Image 1: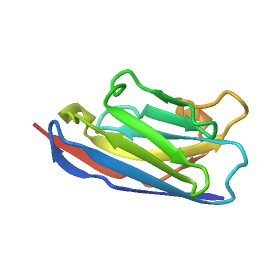
Image 2: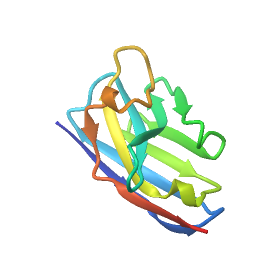
Image 3: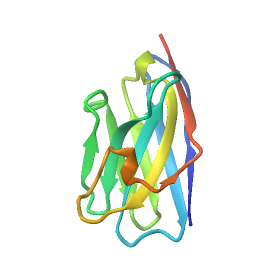
Image 4: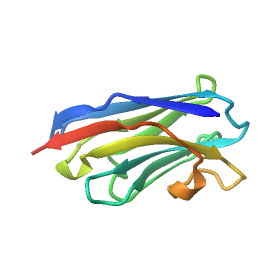
Length: 125
């Protein structure tokens, strides 16, 4: 069993920044991928950024250039630095962890087994 705890959400004005953090604990896979997802009211969950233990990263087109994902394989933490936030970034943000069979980072939620409870990000115009 793996436990994921997110922190760092909040409310900011458009153009502002926030940093989300996720701490993973428990029986973590030797080879894993982690990612950030978000879900706005009335919308489907979408992958925002992905990370694998080799340090490779990937981003959704909507956040590329504004968000930066990073991980610490020793502390089992995942960070999402979000700059130039816009109202459309408003959502509940979730940290996820899954076994990596060799394909690396992923933005598909079906490739993740464990999910955090989420942290709310609200961006006002």
